[in-house]
Amino acid sequence: MLGVLVTLLIMPISGYAGKPLAAKAMEIQPSDKVLLVKYLTGEFDVAASPEFTLIKPPLALRSLYIRKDVLQAYKSMQQAARKVGVNLLIISAFRSYLDQRKIWNKKYKFASLLTETDDERLEYVLKYSAPPGFSRHHWGTDIDLNAVSNEYFNTGDGKKVALWLDENSEKFGFFKVYTKSRRGGHLHEDWHYTFYPTASKYMLLYMNYVKPVHVDSFHGSHLLSIDEFFFEYVFNINKIILSRMSIDGLLE
Ligand SMILES: [Zn+2]
Image (cartoon, rainbow, N blue to C red):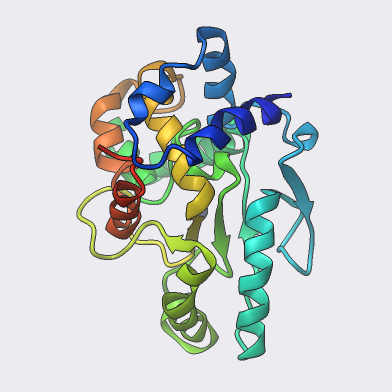
């Protein structure tokens, strides 16, 4: 049901490219906003959502949920890569709020062994992880490919994969999110790709609705200024994505 709701909310917006978005967003009723925020932050039953499907090995490292439109585009990209001897593997796709909370809290506890203060702990975990509710993986539009390690992409097969993705992924709608050239924010990640056609609309909705609403408690959340966090992390992504969103009329 939530999936249907979000389809209804998202689809008209794609036809509104170039028009002021705030006006369109205002049309969402308060009761729908609660559901929308839950959807955007991974708090829904993904198995019951018609927009999502389950993928398994050999397509993915393990059983994972992903949006169907993202999977269709991914398969085209994967087949094109395979033709030239480049093997792609999805190692992470959709993550629920609870999945992300587990990852966050585990890393935060680990950071406690290495650091002295809560501030240092928070900084450590934020290098590569978003707090629950703030991960792009909640949208089912973002995927991690092959290995969660920049070293992997520097040599051998990994380098071949990185070079091919750099050259070709955008033709299939996939953009690297955490690029090297940014300052601050999450560190550079060679493995994390977003499916722009859908993720850009999710991001727009996220910017409109999640920001003031969804502040929950997790390890270290008391230290986080949510406005600064959005500016420093959530919107600190590949500038090509932001400029495309601007061209598409999704950003002012
Ligand atoms: Zn990722």
